[in-house]
Structures are given as structure tokens and as C-alpha cells.
Image (spheres, rainbow, N blue to C red):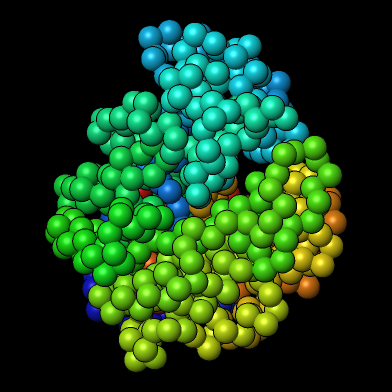
Length: 550
């Protein structure tokens, strides 16, 4: 049955479609849009009305626009135009790509870029020696794919003054040989030891990167996102003012929110002083129209370099890597978080916490538990990644109203998981990874994000893993298959859940909703789940306007 029409002219009609909203496929097969809003749902007869444009979806799935709840669009955009190693599948290919970049950029004083996978290197630690063989006369600084470490050559180590006598920073580790000499891999905060010699990222490069990032996100059906770090980080300056100005000027049109970075040392201030400065940063930059009601807290690192905070010590890696054998690093104490998070919530900030290890997850939940229930209910606190979790903490998410900000693509047996992560976690903890189904069944709300440029921003690749718990296109044994989600649940997380937690919209396809939509090339509900990753976005609609068409 067609919804009653109150208009005679539509801005856009999409017909011959499979429409999805609120976790279900709708009876209607067409959607009509006027003034950026959905005004009618019905059948193909809608396409016969006076309309500025008609799109035939050819039976493809039409969903609300995807929202990426945890992404680094600025980093990703800039690094696309630097020495980009994200598509390399071997050490040889990585080194060839670096060589080509060096040869085609003879005037570059520094070779910057990254995106290499740790799993390609023994123990996850590449060496300066390998880089020196490609480029020895210019310094090189390459971030790894997850941005929790970097790879430098000998010239970069020399310029930064990093030697065997350089102590590890409190929030990181220098990879060393048996004599204590740095070998070229810098983990976590150790990358910041180069901050004083790295060239400043210029505004023009950031503007070009952000424009390119938005185009790429639109191509995947992503209409909104949360920039997960706004502040000085790993050689990048604080781009909050520039980002907000681009939103205000209309150069960035996506539904964008940002998370202001909480520095690991609070910039030398007391926690109340630091929170007051965040309030001022928000006031100064929100005038551009960007939503800045969230603070980003990175509680720990990652298990591959033994910096994820664990309740029990890491297992022996058996990889020949010189790793610490403790419980990983927590960049904030439990007491600091219990002071910080209630203050953030009281000042109108949602806490967006990075927590990979089970100890980090517990620290985050314990901190949110300190918030007064009435205040907590008004906030959109969320914990991202939640890779390893003690089963006792699963039900606390729903109890405390904490949203699970899931990076679904990682819940599989990829080379990093097989070669680096599982040996370090051990058999027991290896079975406690990414418990999405248990969290969903407990009543927790799920949102979804990619963490791009750590991994692809294509939602359909992540949705495939959420359902299959296996790499797209691979025939590997699923990773803890009983923690898989069904496709409808995963889609709701990437639409409704992500819209809600970022505060940028509703994620619904219904009359009266903002017309942010994504049109896929097929209906993945009709095919085998093993082919979900073959789904491709064809058209992206933002506020009723087509912003991408394949």
C-alpha cells in the first residue's frame, strides 16, 4: 500500500529496490524523497510521479546510510597520498613500493607514510636494516597499519637521537637487539620520540586528504562518521580548527562528529584543569557546525606488541621477538579513569574509549560505573574494539548503558591473528575475543566502525566477518563462530547504532526520516552468507542528493 502523498513533485525516487530499516526488510519497494526527507514508501508506481530523478535499484538492497563510529578519516586521507603500503601483501612488495615512492619523490626531505601489516615481519617488528637497503640518505617514518607503532631507518634514528642509551617511554617500547641497540621498530608512545624532528603536516595536505577521504567514504555508502582522534598524535598536529572550518564552509558535507583527544599525560595538568580546557576547545571549535561532544581515551595498546592491558600476563610468544612478558600497558591508571570519566560526563562529554585487553575493558567499565546514574543516562559512552573480554564483564555493558563500538572486520583468523595474537594470548583467552553475540544477547547496544586507515572502511567487508567470523573470501576456520551476528543485527549496528552513538542522525529509512541512503548492487539476504563480501555499494544519497554513483 502506498503512503498518502502530499506533494506533486519528488526530488528523487528509488524503485525496484529491497528496502531495509529497523532490522527488517520492508514490504515497500520504492522510496520517494523531497527536500532531503523521505516522504513516501510504496511500489513502483512512485516512479511514475513527477520527479527530478528516478533511480532503478535493480533489486539491490537500500539501507540507511552507513555511519562509521570509529574512524581516522584525516589520517587515512593524508596517508593515501603518502607512501601507502596498505595493499602490500609481502615484505618484498612493501620494499618495492617504498623504492618506487622514493624514486618518484626525489625532493622529499622525509619519506612518510605507512599502512604495512605487522604480520609480514618476524615478531611483527620490521628493521631499520631492511629500510636502509632501500633508502639510507633520507629519514623514513612509516606508521604500521594499526597506528600503534612505526618503522624507521637508521637516518631517522640518528636525527631523533635514539640510541641504546635512550630509555623506553612510559607509554611505549623501543624494539632492540641483544646489545640494546634500536632495531627500527617503535611501539606505541615510542613513535613520539621523533616528534621533534618530523616535518609539520601542512594545512594544504590535510585539506586535500580530508576531501579525498570523504569521497572514499561516500563511495562505500558511508554518510557520516566520528573522527576518533582530534588532537596532536603521532606526528600529526591538532587539526580540529581546520576540520571544523571545512564543515562550516561546506567543503565537508557528511554528518561528522569528532572526539577530542585526551593526552596520556593530561598535558602536565590536573585532570580537572585538563577537562576545563577540553570544554574550551569544544566551545571554540563547535561554532563551525561540527559535533564535538565526545572525548577519546586510549586506555591501552594492542596485543601484537604486548601493549594491550591484560588481567593476566601474556603467554610466551615463541616468535623470537624481544617482548616484555608482563600484563601490557595501561596508559591511565584505574584511579585516573575513575576521576576523569565522571568529570567528562558531567561537562557534557561522552567517553569514547579504546580498550583492547580485558584489563582495559574492565578499567573503562569501572570508570563509567563511577558516574552518577542520572548523568550517565544522558551520555553516549562507548568502548571501542573490546577484543578480549572477561566473561564477567559482558553484562555490565547493558547495565551501565555502555555502547559496544565494534570493529567487526577484525573478528577472524587473519595472519595477524594467527601468527601474532593467538600465540601471545594463549588458548583460553584466545576464545574470549570479540564476543559480539554474547554482548548483543545481554542487551548491550552495538555500533560499528572501521578504524580506517587501520583497515578498509567498506562496511560490507566488516558485515561479512560479523556474520561469518572469517576473512572475506577465505576458507579459514571461523574465529569463535558462536559469537557471530546475523546480517540484520549487524546492519542495525552500522546504521541505527552508529548514528545514535555519534549523535549525527537516526539511521532509519521511513517517512519523515532524513534521506541518507546507500544502494547496494544486490540483496545479500538472498545469497549465501559466504558471499556477503561481494556486495558493492552503487549509489550514496546524502540529504536527498546523490553524492556518489558508481
